[in-house]
Length: 436
Image (tube, rainbow, N blue to C red):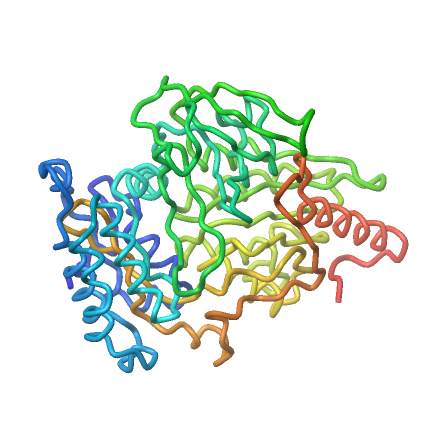
C-alpha cells in the first residue's frame, strides 16, 4: 500500500489528484480523518501495456493481491478470496486482449458484492478523473453511452461539449460508430461497480482534439427516426460543463436558478456554485442537480453549508432548494443526499441513488490501468444506517426510462416543478424558508 498522508493527495501544483479525490469520493466527510487511505498520485511513466505485444495476465494477480490487502471487511463478505482467484484466473490467462484481462478482474471483484471495486482504463482515468481533479481540459466528445436492453443509448451529454453542440439527445439509440456496431467500435468503458450490477456506460475513444466520430443514431422507432451525426472532439471538461449549466428558468411564474455539478473532484465546482448563488438576487428557488460521480469530502461539506440554515454564519442560499439525484448518483454525492435530507434543507427529487458508499483508493497496475479498491466502511457517517448497496431514496420519486427519451429529462423537470411550487407556497404563506 503506497500511502502519503502528509501530502493529502495533492499534485505538484497543490491541486487534488483524482486518486485522492476518488478515494475521498468513496467516501466522504469522515475520510479526511482517514488520511492513510488517501494515496498520492505518483509519476505515471509509460504504460507497460503499450510496450508488450500481447495481453499480460500479471495485472490480474496484482489486482487480486491489492484487494486482499485493502478490502475494508476482513471476512471478504463471506467469499473465499483464494478460491475466487482460482475460478477467474484461467480467463485472464487465456485472454486475447488486455481488456479481457480487466474483464476477468471485474468478474472476480463482482463476487464481493461491494461498490468501488473496479478497473479503470489508463486513458479514461487520465482524461475523466485525473485531469478533472486538476481542473484541466482533456480531449473528449462529451457524451456518455449506456447499454440497456441490448442497445447503446445516449445517456448524458456534457453541456457545452461537442455532442451537445451536434444535437445529440438523451435517449438516442446509437446504431453504429464509424460504420461499426458499438460493441466493435472500441468504446472506452467507464468504471463499473460489478458487485452491484446494473447497466454499463462508455465514452467514445479519442486521444486528441479535432478527431471525428461518425454516428448513426435513431431518435424514435423506425422508420422515421434514423439520422446521422458527425462529432469532432474538443478540449473540454465536466467542470466547464457545470459552468455552462448555470442558468435561471421561469417555471409556474417563478424564477428558478439551477446548475449541474457533474463531479466534486476538486473545490472548483463548489466555488462556481457559490459565486452563482451570490448573484441570484431575483431568483425564488434553486435546483441543484448532483447526478454523477462523487468527489472530495470538503466539497461535500462546503456544498451543504451553502444551503444549511444551521450552518455557521447562516446559509448563502435561504430560499427553497431542491436536490436532484438518480441511480447514477454515487459515492460522496450519496452522503450529500443523505445529509441534505437529515438537515431538512429541502426535498430530494428523482430516483434512489446508486448505493456505492465505501471509502476507496486507486492503485496503478503494471499495465497502466488503475484499480479502485474499497478500503473503508462509511457507516459512521450515517449513524449506523446502511447506504452501501441500498442508496438514498428520494422524497419525490420520478420514473425516468432511457430508451427513446427524445431528450426528455423527467428527474430534472420534476425538480424544477417542485422548486417552483415551493416558491409559490412561500409567496402565499410568507414563510422565509423550509419545506417540511
